[in-house]
Length: 234
Image (tube, rainbow, N blue to C red):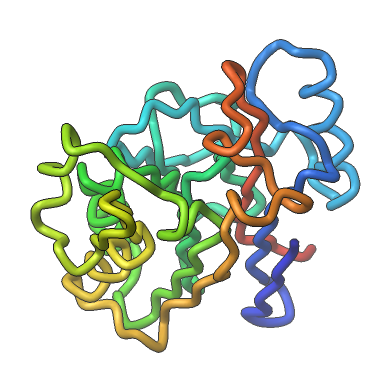
């Protein structure tokens, strides 16, 4: 999955999301995972030296990236930069990759239920506002687990007390629409509906295309890689 947004003759935004066919992209020392990442990057003309990876912690922390000297950013769930040719990346396997872009800046957030309820999206927007007016900001919500399969237990229900419209009951079970919560947070911070695009695909449902931690129930989850960058054409 690839999207290129031309800004002018010299600059464009590149957005990538790997799929199941590309293999697991987990950020670890597994040789096969490393090989999968290298092949995917090479296929998309990205130097591994320019790839910046978030070492996820289901937090609300957004890190500003100024150069490519540090390849892995620890304990972080969102990355932001205004520098061209730096490729910001996260991994997901049901959590939602959220891409932010404008002519001046790009960001990417790993939006799982913990990060969403702890305000990873507003925190990323707050970092973004230092670079760009919100009216120029566009958002894409990538594939993630849908409300059809994101079931929660009563012990975490209190985490969603501010989002009653995102909850629904089905056969006495509680389901949550995470993308609806993200949209609510975006609207609250002044992002208009027309600037938000949803790639409406459920990772749990689409077993041929995506990995899903909940569906596969593996101890070491297989994951997809999501990337965003401002590319400057020389």
